[in-house]
Length: 132
Image (cartoon, rainbow, N blue to C red; front, side, top):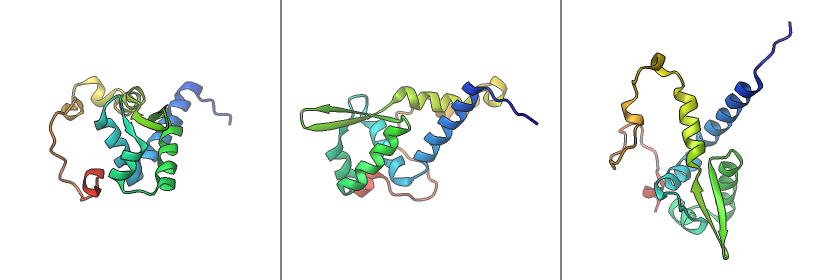
């Protein structure tokens, strides 16, 4: 039996899977959240390393992985590299995850922009803020 797949839909699933896998690592998730909070201008790799308390090679590995799956972007200014979250990629991933959620009914009140600083009270995980 020959199975045919819509290449666009299949690529969406593969891309979403790669991005979710990248965010499935505690350090990469913490780095990504730090970059989301930093805003579109981003922050330098040095500051990320300080806040994450990571050696340069380890930080570079995680930044490269996030960049490779399209969740962050880097730009060089002078001798510094600044990283920022790719908000379009983040929005695409959220849209993919919530596509046709609840059969089109508005059921996700927490997915709107949050201006609070409170964190969910789930399992204790070490965030970048706690590491510094």
